[in-house]
Length: 117
Image (tube, rainbow, N blue to C red):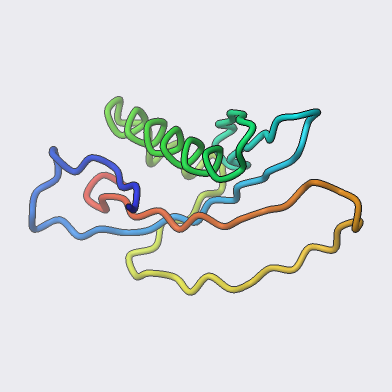
């Protein structure tokens, strides 16, 4: 199941677009902590799989809230989040990490309404 933002206020003729966000996951004691680097949204869970689902849901809720108050465009601009009308190609980014570290990154390509951005 893919998380998407609510589109109820969007006209059917409005196109959709995409933003790319960076998710960082790291281990703290017995829990995993996840954070969206661009939004600052974070949460924790013992299960990395549940954590990822939970973090994506929270990111969608935060983006919905920005849309609801009409601040999405300003927030994106202020935080260097680029809006794409076409689905961008997300390549693989290799980040050298110590073999013993419990930190890794993931890319989230999120579809959002273009009419308000």
